[in-house]
Length: 110
Image (cartoon, rainbow, N blue to C red; front, side, top):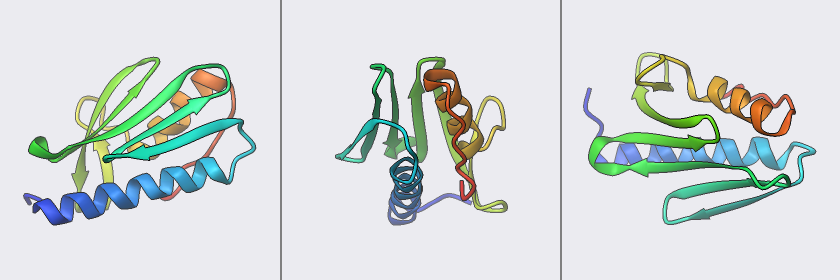
């Protein structure tokens, strides 16, 4: 299934909102900025996680200290899945948060 432009933007907006909510609900000292479809999470230690939409490819990209990751939406599971590792977005975000700031944070809805 190919996502329409509107579907793609709705799905990315929803995913970014869930990410923002999870970080907002945490006890982590961080700054969130969502501008032009790019969500930047800046941790107290100076590291960042960046989620950006890649409209032409209909992908959600994540940049973290450990590298860059490209996610395709899987309508069967209703999740964003990494195109190189099959890791769901929520699992990757939990892993990179643990790697970058040493805290366990769950992204259950992703």
